[in-house]
Length: 144
Length: 422
Image 1 (cartoon, chains in turn brown, orange):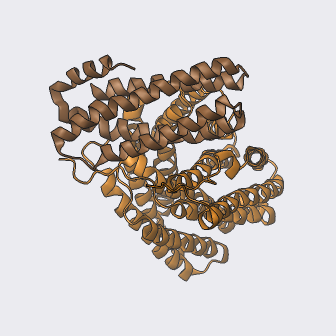
Image 2 (spheres, chains in turn brown, red; image 1 turned 60 degrees about the vertical axis):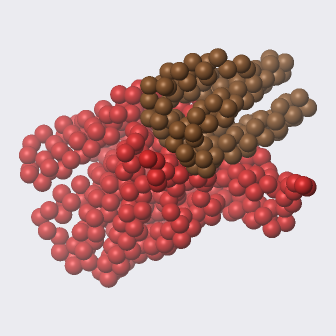
Image 3 (cartoon, one colour; image 1 turned 45 degrees about the horizontal axis):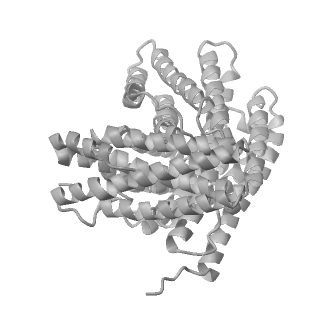
C-alpha cells in the first residue's frame, strides 16, 4: 500500500528531473527551469509527506526514534542542500555545474529511494497493516 | 521487531578504492601477457592461458565486483558489512596474494604455489562469504538480495571446486573427474557468480539511474531460479554422464539472451537522454554479452571451432565493460559524497574528480582492446595490439583512480570545513 504509493511518487519525481535535464541538454533553458521547479517542489513535497506524517506515525507505533527514519531525515537534509545548489546554478546560468551537481544528486537520490523502497516502506506497511489505506489518503490530501 | 536493520551510510572510501585500484594493476599484467604470449593465451589449457584467465576473472572482474559489493551492501542489502575497513584489508590482501600465487603457479608450474594459492584464495572467498551471507539471509529479502545471495553461494562453490583442482595441479595427478570438475568450476563461476550478480545489479541500477521502464517482476523473480536450476542439473547430468547436457546450456543462453534484449531495449528507450559514458559502457557490455551467447551457441552447434574462445573473450569483455562503466561513476560519486558529508567547502563536483574527457578516453581504448581481442582467435598476433590497447587503457584507469584518491586526500588534509556559529 505505502510502498506502491510512495514508489510511484519517486518515479513521478524522476520524470520531472529527467524532463528538466533533457530540456537543458537541448538548450531550452526556460522550459528546463520550469520543469526543474516542478521537480524541486515535488521532491520537497515527497520529503514533507515522509517527515510530517509517515515517519512520525511509524516512530510512534514502533518506538524506533533514532533508527532508519532518522537516517532518512539526514539524507533528506543532504538532498535538500543539493537541490538548492542546483536551483542556484540553473538560475545563474551555470549549466556545467548544474549537470555536475545533478549527477551526484541523482545517484544519491536513487540510493536513498532504494533504501526506502526495499526496507523502510515494507517495514512501514507491516507496521501500519490495515491503517495503510488511511495513511495513503492522508498523504494524498497533504497540500503541496 | 526490526532488530539488526541499519540504514547506515557508505563504508570509508578506502574500502572500495583498495579493490578498484588493484583492478588496473592486474589489467596491466594481463595486457603484458597478451603482448608477450599471444599464441599461448589462445591455446586452450596452456599454462599461460590459464594464468591469464584467472588474472582476468579473479584479479579484475571479481576484484571489482567484491569492491562494489562492499559499497552496494549498505544500499541494496540494508545492513552494511561490519568493520568494513578491517575486513576489506583482510579480504583484499588474501585475494591479491592468492591471485599472484595462482597465476605464478600456472606460469612457472610450481606445485607448492598451487597449495599456497588454494589456501589464500579459499580463505579470502570463504571469509567474504561468511561475512556477507548472513546479511543477505534476512526475512524481508527482496529479489536483488536473493540474487546477490545466489551469486555469493556460486562464488563459494566455484572456490571450493577450484581448491580441489589446485590440489590436482599440485600433485600433478588428474583423476577421471578432472574435466567434469573444470566444467563445473567455470560454469558456476561464469554464470552463477559473474552473470547473476551483474543481472541482479542491473535490475536495480538500470531502471533507477537511467530512468527506464522497470524490469518485469517475473524476470526479477525467476532469473535466479532458472539459472540455479539449469546449473545444478547441468552438473548432475555431467557427473552422471547422462545425455542431452546441452539442453541446460540452451536454457542458460535463452535466459541471458532475454536479459540482454530487455536491457538493451530499456537502455535505448531510457528517459534520461543526457550523454553519459557509463551508458556507453552498458550498451557495449550488453552487445558483447550477445556476441558471447551467439558465438557459444555457434560452437555448441559445431559451426566453427574458434567460436568457443571468442565466446569466452566476449563474456570477459562484457563483464569488464559493465565494471569499468560503473567504476567511472562510483568513484567520483564517493569522493563527492564523503567530502560533502564531512562538510568540506572545496568538495568537487563529480565531473571534476574524473573529467568526462578521460572517461571517454577509457571507453574508446576499451573499444579498441575489445575489437582486437574478439578478432584474435582468428588472427592470434592481433592480440599484441589488443595488449597494447590494454596497457594504455589500464594506465589511464589507474591514473584516474589514483588522481581521485589524491584529490580526496588533499581536500581532507588542506580543505576547509563549514562551521556553524552558535
